[in-house]
Image 1: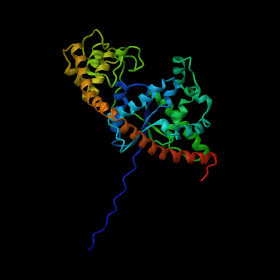
Image 2: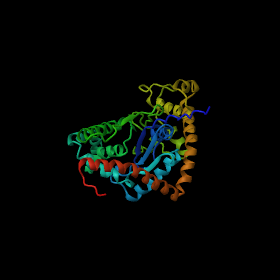
Image 3: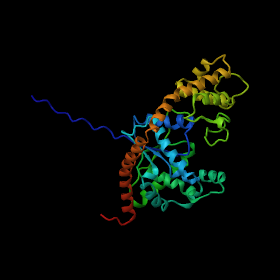
Image 4: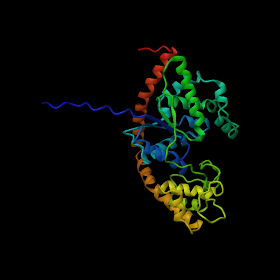
Length: 343
């Protein structure tokens, strides 16, 4: 009797994730723990597209040479943290014209009132009153195009990006209602693992490289001596006890969160480890842990950045792969809105 052949069931299609980061300087420890480290982990479960969002950076006037340098350096850093350009797509936003092509069509399907209510537009206008440009106003439309052009299922979002995801969903839903099913409505993705890292100088604010106090943030490229110095100066309190209490002890709780993110410990275990020890010992331990964890990333970054041809080759291939996906969406959208396309 011949053996029956069993056809294996097809594997379920993996969901697609898109995320981007602006090339406005070296990412901080907060960017790493809150986003970049998780980007590498997501590759095991999703089809990932990771974008250096250089077009978004133009809402603030950038030095052209610095922007070009920062774009390549950020791509090298993403490779160093573990982004796999063979299995996933790493590209520069401006290298894929479909983003801006779709953005115009979406802008024609977005209401002025929707954009005028965006919190980030109001905040950035207040910070840069001498440059309240139209790009800053229509920024959410381009972000919607970034997401919808790939029909991304999921978008990692922080609190400051929730509004942008909501308007992307509104635009997609409106377009689908008028022209028929076209876009996937993206969902927000909040990683289970991650940390919201606050300023070392003012733990009521997020860590940011734009902070005028250079000791308030740690850059991924800071060497060990710099990291030790910055953590030594981190704001704590007069209590002298390593205990997690974000309301009463925000500085200490922030340092505990950073330490726990790298060691995998719970807050209770961190408290137990440092019971009876002063803040000096605690800060030194946090700094040593951070420096040791970042050292291999920094070494890999230096190695990759030294090979400009490799970095540019990755970005060229990534742009080609992204353009194939995005081009299909734009052609479909152009056809649906009635734009004449020649064979």
